[in-house]
Image 1 (spheres, rainbow, N blue to C red):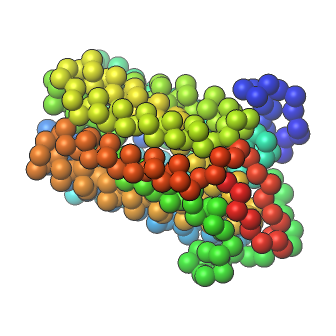
Image 2: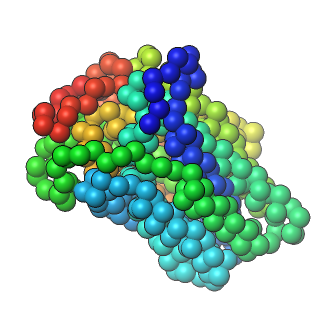
Amino acid sequence: MTTRGDGAWWRPTLPAGIWALGLVSMFMDVSSEMIHALLPVYLVTTLGASALQVGVIEGVAEATASVVKVFSGAFSDWVGRRKLLLVAGYGLGALSKPLFPLASTASLVLTARFVDRVGKGIRGAPRDALVGDLALPEARGAAFGLRQSLDTVGAFSGPLLAIALMATSGGNVRLVFWVAVVPAMLAVAVLILGVREPPRISAVPKARSPIYPREIRRLGPAYWRVVAVATVLTLARFSEAFLILRVQDLGLATTLVPVVLVVMNIVYGLSAYPVGALSDREGSKGLLCSGFGVLIVADLVLAFASNLGLALVGIALWGLHMGMTQGLFASLVAGTAPDDRRGTAFGVFNLAGGLALLLASILAGSFWEAFGGASTFLGGATITALGLVAALAILPAQRSKVVVPSPSQPTQSED
């Protein structure tokens, strides 16, 4: 653990373990985004999948990860250890990567995505809970913002590497998929060698199943308000695969399609850490509501874009909204959940988000097939506006850092 530092609000002292977890996320995202940047186009143009099939594959994959997160988060609370689950999850994610270049049908791609997302599900909630364990309350927003920023460095480095490989290999998508195996293995190595979790808290009651009524009650009303707002936002934030399909509709060459994720994730990465650090000082509600507003503008730009330049502006705004919301939601979950149920809290939070993303991606694909790409983004803007109303109504105007009650105290509503 780190000690209370004297850094400025935008440069707080953070423990080495959070930096290491950020690097693990970065390497795995390099691998995942090398694949994800090309997968929608590969599915549609090479394997003959429809936009609806793309939505189903992406939605099922993310929902699978979210269901697994519930149980991995609760299990990490129960055993009092997080790293073992992280190694298992990142290891399974690394082992799934060779399945993508070997897949020859859309159903095999779905299998590969399923295995990959099971790995993500195993590691996701314990990783976020470990960040919460390591960070001091007054630097929690910065800690989650840093991890998210490093994660996003990988998210735009992967597509850049994919572009370079596509250009030098004559558009060999399978080669890109094979190279993606390497950074995934590096992620596992950094995790094993560079991350040490804090000592187990003694005399903490073991967590039961996350659906056990007592566990649900212990999470508290403040936590559930955060989950409700985040779920509505996720209904509006369907898979990035539809961003890729949008620019392809506007004429972007297949070899340059990964630039979509480069643009989005550069903005995402540059904004996540400063927004998280600022929330530690100024509070999260205003920043979150601003992020909702940015997503509405992004959807409208993408709906009415008539050329690639406007579409890229919309994609950059999409990345800005991610930087203004995702780390803050994680910080709010960590701050509103009891310390000994943090893994469970992240698991339930991610389950709600994953199911919402499944529904959102299926609806996005259905709208795309029935009415065209513009309708997908107009629908997203409408749902985001509803989410903004919900955020204004139920999130108190307080700072995101909180003092979490001990396990023997009732959970208090604070954010």
